[in-house]
Length: 161
Image (cartoon, rainbow, N blue to C red):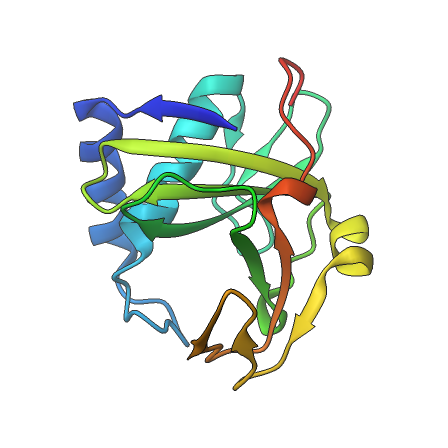
């Protein structure tokens, strides 16, 4: 996991782009997660010098032309190995890799949790249909149809990711 303190430039850019984007169709948070998602994309692209693509199917392009989709969640606590990452099944983009991030709710820190080739993620992830209780907190039930994996099962970053 890589912890990155965001800059004012990162946050201002994400806020500006989120405002331009507005609410996406089928957005559970009615566009409220746009800043978080865009901030994770900006920070990851900045860290690894990638090209922001901003298409529906992927967010970034590597220097070798690989398509990367960044999936982010918000929260206050430092992510732990037993926490879950998720890809909503109706939004399984046509990408080569997923990168997973947690964005602190005040937007000051982005934790880059790990990555996984999309095909491998789809094979190894656990299917959580709507209404499935969270194994770590049975009082929380998944609202969406997700594929999920624990942070500890993700591949870790190196300078080529």
